[in-house]
Length: 150
Image 1 (cartoon, rainbow, N blue to C red):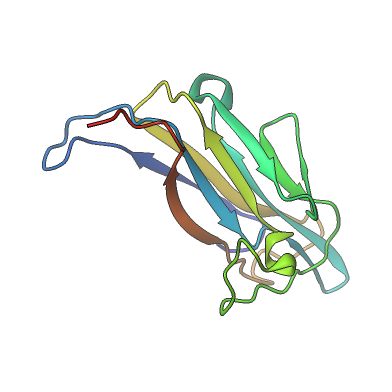
Image 2: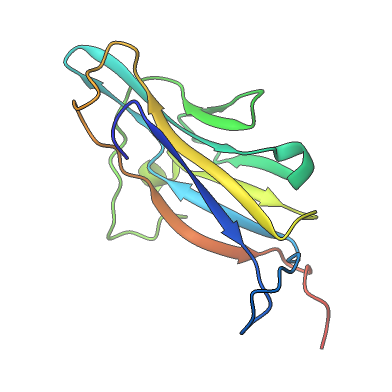
């Protein structure tokens, strides 16, 4: 994502083989590498937010060793403009450095067949073309006990 911009991803759940929306059981979405950087002396901060978190039933979960702060806008934002090394060869959930820039959005009781997450960066003093920002999305995970027994 180009620095100083953002994009919103809409994840929609449908019945297999159809376009029929279906509300999923409880699940979580995890993002890694939500950090910051200093570009040309200016501090850049990345962020990840759940759009309309109140109606989607989302909560933010951060690792105990996090470099992130939750905000009142249902976002995770770095505490400082520090670029955290992401070890793509390690299992992210156990690599302390990688885990420190992780945010997990948990939807314990989803109310809709879709959720939206906005990712981007803020840097008032950066030139728009100064950098691009990477985020790592590790997919969806069902919450334990959220699926009915067969």
